[in-house]
Length: 100
Length: 199
Image (cartoon, rainbow over all chains, first blue to last red; front, side):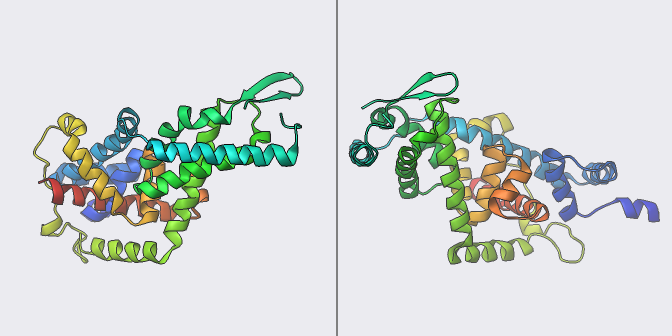
């Protein structure tokens, strides 16, 4: 009974282990501790499933933003082109043709 | 204006044309920033700063990588600087205190079990469907933007950029133990926020 008590853990500890397991891996003893907890705790099983869902959504967020047509305004771009032009003139003025 | 340089020892000619940067790369860099920093004005400033910093260090570009890879690396460093700045400010600290206080309420103090009001509930939809659900993704982005800046930075670098844990700790000046506490708290917070706003 005492041994079993030693290897069980509370929900707070279990979800910490869930996170670590999926990112970095956990020690064998913690793996057993987590398995025992999850077997009897449907709530933490829901947490585990939703935690993995969030990981996948984060990775997908990157693709979503690449795909979506979110662009800078023409005004901003024109202003930026002007700044680059000024900087180039300034640079070549100071440094001459050595970088060209 | 094109800039041609010959690099020793191969004498391979590198052609860079900063005039084309805005047309070729600015939208990509803007979206890259927006997926990591939700503030639109900061994102635009960072794109601008990236181009100006690149012009300053044109001589360092050796042509070993593509122009866009080089520009993205400069931008990435600027984003990390912004993370650091935001986390150390008063606003960042206040948001962190607030979020930490809120999380103390997630579990029973003595038993470490979930408190009734924070017990995870099923999202009542298929996981595959949720992954592509526009509204659900929008809620996640909203939840991310409410996180304390340091939490958001750690989480984004880990899950979006898939950076090495030790590199994140070094870049953001946090210990390995702190890193795990932040990841743990961020996930708890995000999941709870999704549940509150979705169900």
